[in-house]
Length: 172
Image (cartoon, rainbow, N blue to C red; front, side, top):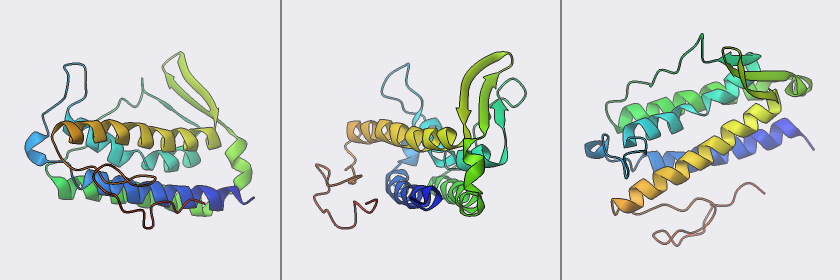
């Protein structure tokens, strides 16, 4: 199995699905959250849009230390900004993945906050986490959209709002 080819195919599929969800984010609800412990809509959506760039980070760096590189939310003013961030993040991750030497995917990648190790992973595992985080947070966004009565697109098949099954399962 060509692992890079498989990752690229999955990456593209997740990008296309994510784009459908992010296009639906209502800018007039950017400051809305379903619960006081929940992220605001804009923060959640911008985080989802930047996650594809973590593929590039996994390949080009040996880790990330939040103590020396604290998280800064991207400036998003509207849906165009949100979709542009997604496109740029995906292009960055895809570019690095297309040229990666598969042998380095077994190299160590450390996620930390100063002395606290949050994850001792391989580069491959970090790429998989980036994919999983995208799916996880996109599902959260789907709940936000549902609570606002915004129809949900299909992800891996039809949704209650989108019964079409065309070109939805393009991973296999």
